[in-house]
Image 1 (cartoon, rainbow, N blue to C red):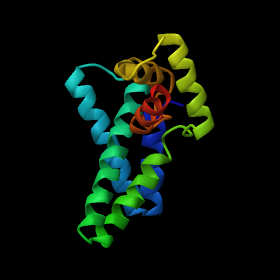
Image 2 (cartoon, one colour):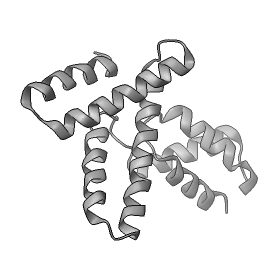
Image 3 (cartoon, helix red, strand yellow):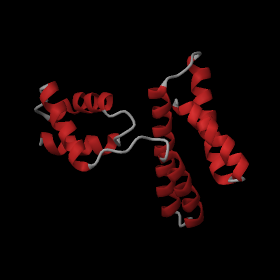
Image 4 (cartoon, rainbow, N blue to C red):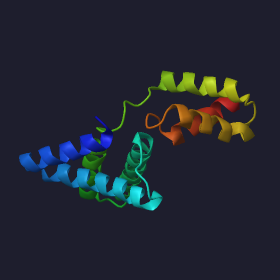
Length: 147
């Protein structure tokens, strides 16, 4: 079952269960996916849906940081709940050791040896870990490897 079909089915089940918070987040996800389809004027695939989910997750994480800095714990809690629901649809994230192995493979594949080659490493990892790695973390780990 495709991710879009899964989202549609989950929306129906959230409606039946009267789970308003989950229903709202799923509707936001489907709206973002639909918007991306309208923008590209074509049906988007699983990779693009995952990219949309990653973007939404990153936006929510940034919002949580800003709400915490402003002392708005109530709004931060709402965003955290949305993060949990969005994360349910993303594949399992790579752990630190798997990420390290992937970065080492990217360094070997790209021949990167200096900090200016960071973009090559991140691009290589991005193609191999769609939806499974935080690219900011990848960039930080790659910087450490290139020092």
